[in-house]
Image (spheres, rainbow, N blue to C red):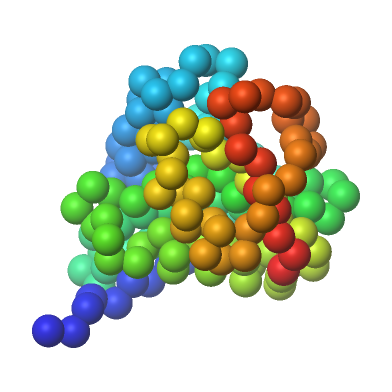
Length: 157
C-alpha cells in the first residue's frame, strides 16, 4: 500500500487543530523541563512577522505536524515548534517539515539554520533526526545562554 502524501504549506497557526497540537507541545515541554529551560513559542509568538509557520497535512486535510522558521536579523534561521501528531509518528512527517523549512530558509537568503532542543533522553529522537540532516553541535546562539538541559545544533543551508 502506498504511503499517503504529506503536503507542507505556510499556514497561520490559528486553526483549531493546529492550536490544539501547539498546546499539547507546550504542555509536554513544561512537563519534561523546568520553566527556565522551555524555549517553545506560544501561539501568539508564532504569529509574529519574523516567524514562518508551516503545517503538514495529509490528502484529506488532517493535520500531521507543524514547524516554524524564526528569522534573525543576522541571516540566521532557527527551527522552532517542530511537532508531529501522535497518530502520524513514524511516517516521515518531521523529516518532510524539516526539509521544507530548510528550503524556505534557503529561498529567503538564510545561510545558517540553528536550533535548540532538550538534552534529556526524552529529546533523543529529535537529536537523531537533526543529526541525520546535517546538524552538528554548536554553542548557544541568538539570545540563548549556556543551559545544561539544552543542546544547540546548527548547519549551513
